[in-house]
Length: 353
Image (cartoon, rainbow, N blue to C red; front, side, top):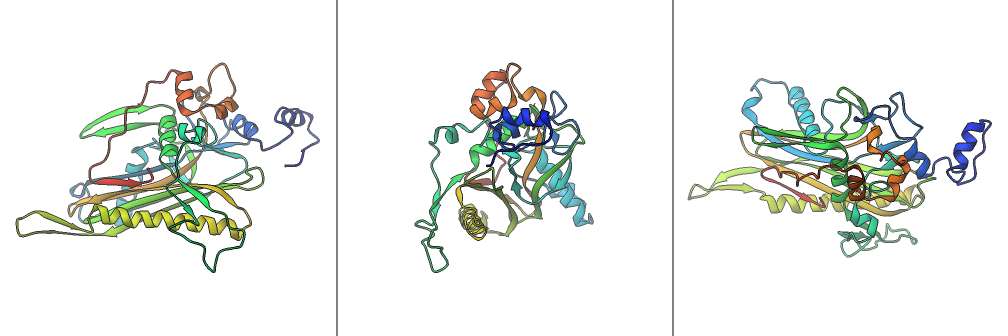
C-alpha cells in the first residue's frame, strides 16, 4: 500500500509508528479496543481506541422440547426464541441487540483466531486442509480461468474455538448452567454482525454453515465471509421391532453438509475470480442437530464486529502484541482458567468443526 501523509500531524505520527501504513494489522488492532474493562462492545459504539474492529466467528445448534412453545404460537416468536437460544450456546453473545451486515471483514478489520490470538495449528502451519479447489472433487472445467490456482480449504473449527476462548461460554448440562463467560459483550450492547438463523419443528435436521475466504492482499481488499442455514426434512418411523428409523440418518445428513461446504468453497473461489481478488485459503465448516417429532431445532451462524475489552490486552503490552500470540499464549499471559471441552448437544454433528 502507498505511503499515507495527511494534514494532521498527530495522525502522521501514528502512521509513522505503523510503517506509514494506515491499515496495517498493528494499526487496526491497536484501534479496536473499546471503553470497558471486562466487556467487549460493538463496532461503531463510542469510546473506541481507533478505527478498527475484531471479527469473531460463531456457529451453534440446539434443540428444545416443543411443548414449551404453545401450539398456537406464531412463527415469529419461535424464530426469536431460536435466535436468542443459539446466541447463548457456544461463544457467548447473549442479551445483545443485533444489527445485520453483509459479509466482509474490511481492511480496517482483523479476525480473532486467524490474525490475532491465532489458533496454534494456523500459527504453526500444521493445520491440514480438508480438500482443495480445484482438486480431486472439483477438477478444472470449461468455466475455469486459465490462471486459476488450487485454493486449500481448511476446517473452521480452530477459529470457532478461538472465539469461545475470547467471549467464554455458558454451558448447559440439563437444568444446570455453568457460567464460563470471559469477555462477553455488555448486556444490551448494539452489535453489528453477519448472521443467519433457522428453526423448525422435527422431525428434521437443522443446520448452519460458515466460511472465511482469505484474500491475497488484505490492505487492498476485504476478506470474505459466507454464511448459510437450512433445514433437511426427515421422517421418523418404527420398524417391525418397534425401533426408531430416521431417514435420512445422521450419516446421510452429514454427507449433504459435506457437499454444502464444498459448494460454499467453490462459490468463494468464483467470487474471487469474478472480482480479480484471488483467495489464498478458505476456512469452512457446518454444524447440524436432529430434532425429533416433539422437538424444535435451532441453528445460528454469526460473525460479530467487536471492540475488545481493555482487559483482553495484557497489562504490560499493546493490543497489537496479540498478533504475535496464539490463543494459548494469550490465555497464559492473562492467567485465565482453562475452558473445559464444550458439551456436545445430543443428536448433533459437524463438518470441519
